[in-house]
Image (tube, rainbow, N blue to C red; front, side, top):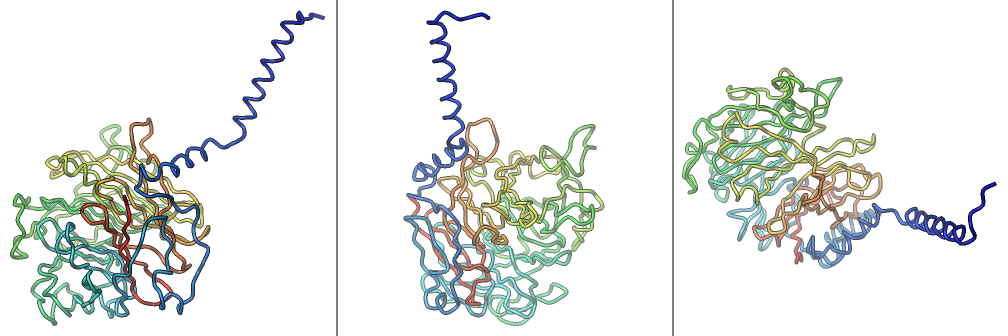
Amino acid sequence: MFTLPRRLAFASTAVVGALALGAIALAGPDFGQSVENQAKAHSMQNFGIVQPLESSSQTSIDAATANANPLKLATFAKQLTARVVAVVPSAPVIDMIALWPNDTNPEWLIACNEQGTAQVGLIRIRIADGLTQTIVSSGLQSCDPVHRTPWGTIVFGEEAGSAGRLFEMIDPLNTTGVVVNADGSITGGTGAANLVWRSALGKLSYEGVGVLPNGVVYYGDEQRPSLGTPGGAYFKFIPTTLRTSTSPITSLAQSPLVSGTVYGMRLGLRNGATDYGQGSQTGRGVWVLASATPGANLRAIAATLKLTGYYRPEDLAFDLAELAAGNVRFCANNTGIEEYGNYGETICVTDGTIAQASTPASTPEVQFLVVGNPELAMMDNIAYQPGRGNWLIHEDGDQLQGNNDIWACMDDGQDADLLSDSCIRVATLNDLNAEWTGGVFSADGSRFFVSIQHNVTGKGIVLEVTGWK
């Protein structure tokens, strides 16, 4: 038997011991958790928040408590404060919100009420005192998205399957109690001539909508996959006449949405763009001609063209820093289905410069920003926070691990991957039935307006959240 000299044997034992201690140290604290803890420790630096919430609320308050103080419906991260902007019995299912007349000093909120055609569809809320007035009294089916356009109008749409329509409105403060008819015409009330159905953008289940200053519009179809048919596709509308002016329009006839062509996104460029289909949900692709016919059923066209599909595309928002630099990038949520382990995702789509994106020859590219998990699942609305460049992601889940939350997620930095560098929980609901919807920031990123939808009071409740540093 070979025997080491005593000195070498002692040294060998010491090395083995050190390695063993190192192995124990590495096997102790989870490295991923240590990274998450670092993110929380630097939440002020990265998110402007002293301390994030550690977990989702497990509480579900009763209607009496919520009616007495609607703020009890939610818990916010330390330092953030909220006030009730409005409690609206006539619009109990408030969804997305647009700031009017601008994002810098908004005075009104223009909001969708996501109910049936017999109920109120679109309202305006005065921020100062919560005064609420009805714009569209009936005729809209599940009003969901609403946005202010760069030329000073409001666009709003229906989340209504293959029958959903997109409308445009001018002068929202002087349009009251109008009715949307089945044929798309507007009658009754005051200012019926201020609204029009923009049939050139086609029909689908409208949710995420993004409008460029020149009139190019990006939007998704909120649809699930079914029996091998892909889920919802993403589309791009290119106006017949691109808008070059920066002044507000004075007539709906001046809008770039009057006419144009719709293209659908299909990823997969290998072999001359032939490797599209399941498995090509990320990477580069092409814009395929979908329709130039007003009122086209884009959902049916997407299936025929085999456009790239996602599990229920929801809201989308432009990266305003990229837009200011002349580039097109937007991030969008696909819900997935939480109860079966498909936790959803946030994707980001680039489409070249604004000039390049104004033609069908641009090259869209999709990459993941946030991959869902049991804690951050079933993403719905998304808001870009000016100044910090973070993304606020709203949950609309089945509350498998607690109530729905709002997460603040950093964009990708200089590391090797393309994913968000960190996400923290900034708000949680204390109502098992409710969800966050419609969050939108003021121009400086300091004021955040958000709806608590499907809450226990049976009323629409909108909050203003402040306190970011």
